[in-house]
Image (cartoon, rainbow, N blue to C red; front, side):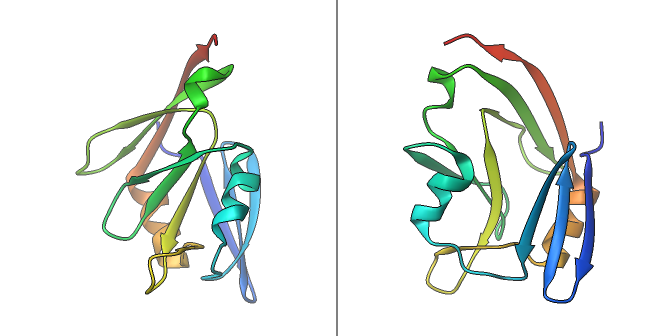
Length: 122
């Protein structure tokens, strides 16, 4: 199944919809690490590098909570399964997380598939 991702650019912001959940992000905006915890709604985050310039940040304790299992597949890479919420980001010159560029979003839209499995019963 193709990822349910749609994008719309308005001025310096883009709007992303992934599987019926909408997000608004400023173009190439740097994101503070403490904000990741709020975005993902967790106490501990884990970094999974998907490509050379796209990272997936997830709730490290997702398996310990009642969550859905989601499998992400990107063409040319091994599939990754996560439990709970994740956010796709890039990084700046210092290695700190930042929002994805429109080109990165287009790459994800064209090359990623998402499949959701049953729930984890913690």
